[in-house]
Image (cartoon, rainbow, N blue to C red; front, side, top):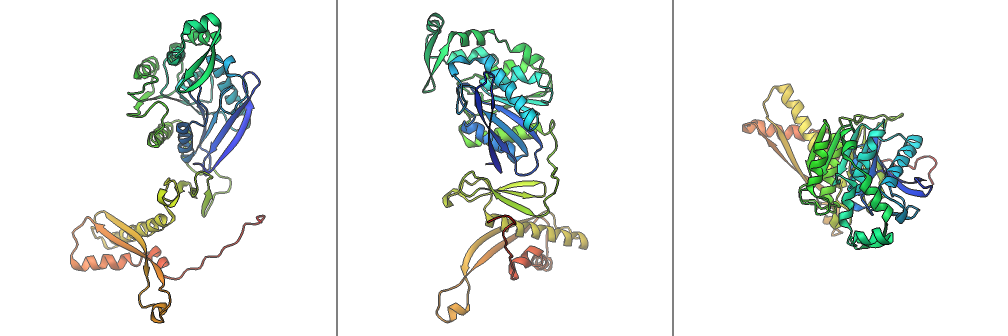
Length: 410
């Protein structure tokens, strides 16, 4: 759901190759974020993908990666622990610093949030931190084990069922998470902190959010994820999280303005590769998505092409009427325009007259609403002025579209 996603690799704490993806915005990058996934999950968890895409839509590039032994990363999961997760996070920071830019924003989900809390204070470039459904201590993860912890301690390892998947957990993992105490790291974080948590989270209880909030120093914020589940499987919940993070982080990262060496003076539309029809639209510094509704094979992530066309007519109409009202000192009040589009038969066309196949034309219906009280003469004038708006004239007049391939393209 971004303009482009780069597949990357870097070396983790043990030398194993870690798999990563960098979700890049459509247009200039305001800043970089590092996103850490939950225990036994991966960078491709659907909720995290949607959050990364949502942040990229707001101009924030997001690196998400698989910890050692998980997802597409190399290494043995059984040899990892909370400490190695922290080391992998530091390796990711160094990779970003050397190849792109050190993260200004660090985001962690669940145990990844705990790892971020333990790490972010040591990263000078980080200006803001976000946790999503994070535990207030690393040992919390042991509550999810269905095996008897004493068996792991006595035998040294055991197969543990976690949400329908089996993992080998060793005694060193237990010892390591029990040694980590996060309250001091949270207290000494000294960076703006946003805590996001669902009150009904059945994996990590809301008490963890309370403990993190109480341990943290200001500026700190809490936002409820309401009825979301722990993995943010509902698209609306992930979208909400991304929007809140982007809005909150806007205080701590660069503003969303064009920083391109060669500013784009026209509109650029590019396929994102996400879904069948999704396109990223850049108009100046503004970023939008275009798509088709689900019933037409799209993902409904943005207006359709004809929606954009209708929006152009509607906005041009209100702007034209506003200019007229200001010049004539007329109190129109606020103006709104409803625009609908359909294909209709062209009446009395040459094809119809000769009995050929009826021609169809595009018809836009425009309904103008004004707050002010208008007499009949002024009502007629409003319609007359609306019909003079430039987009209206463009649609009614014949236009020519010249098309060519960019140089160097086949």
